[in-house]
Image (cartoon, rainbow, N blue to C red; front, side):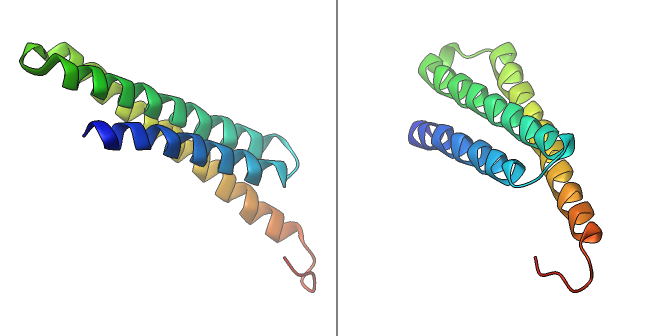
Length: 105
C-alpha cells in the first residue's frame, strides 16, 4: 500500500498538469475553472495519500477519526476532479459547436 500511495502522488501531479495543458489550449474562464477543479482534486488526492501513509505507520494505533479524515480527502478528490473534468469536456463541446462545419478540429 505504501508504494502505491507514493506512486499515486506522482499520478496526481500528472493529471493536474494534463488539465492545465488542456485549459491552455482554450480561451475563456470555463477551462481554467475546470483545471482549477482538477488541481484541487489532485491536491486532495495528495492529502489522501499522505494520510494513508500516516495511517499505515500507526498500525494498531489507528482510530476511526484518522480513517474518516482520509475518506473525506478521498471524497473531495473525486468531487473536485469530476467537476473539473466536466467543465473541461463541456468547454470542448462548446468550442466544437462554435467551429464552422467545414473546419477541422
